[in-house]
Length: 110
Image (tube, rainbow, N blue to C red; front, side):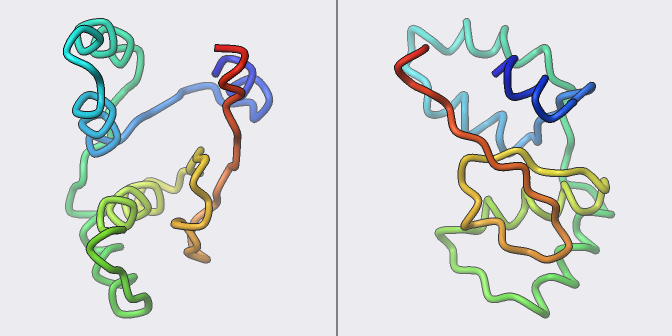
């Protein structure tokens, strides 16, 4: 992850509350405390009134199925805060208002 942050020149890594909860909920019981401690390094962006306004505009332009509703909310937060989105999952973030920074984690090196 440090390589990716350096590669893109990210100076202040942020995470949305949605990502935070996705990561924590997907972790094994043994890993949750360690992961929560690691996530404290990130400032957390909430889904707020600005994000909701962006979401209202985007909802008029795009059709989003329930499978992608969390990704839609994450995109709204990034757009509302004028921030790029670092993701492995670029296909679910195809909003022209959003700058996407693609990356791949090399699992072999973890």
